[in-house]
Image 1: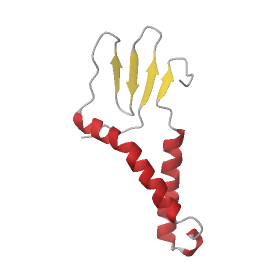
Image 2: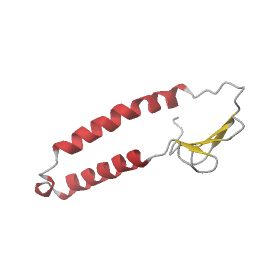
Image 3: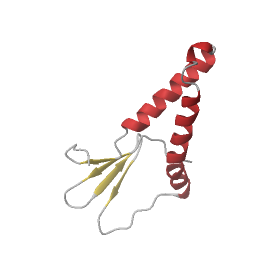
Length: 100
């Protein structure tokens, strides 16, 4: 089962990294290998393609959103929100909270 996000990295000055999700955290020490299971790797790898496809699909509706029904409009709004969330996502943050 894929581990639900959102995920956030914290980098510590001593080389340790902390990967956090909603219900779990994984610490990585600089001298130890870090692994991500195959299902999570596949989900992470698919994100750029999914995001690009969502952008393209939403762009197809630009200029005619006021002509669609409430159900389609709600789904487009949901897609817009998901795209904005992905655009705002900070994947790597230092322990002090500075974006890197």
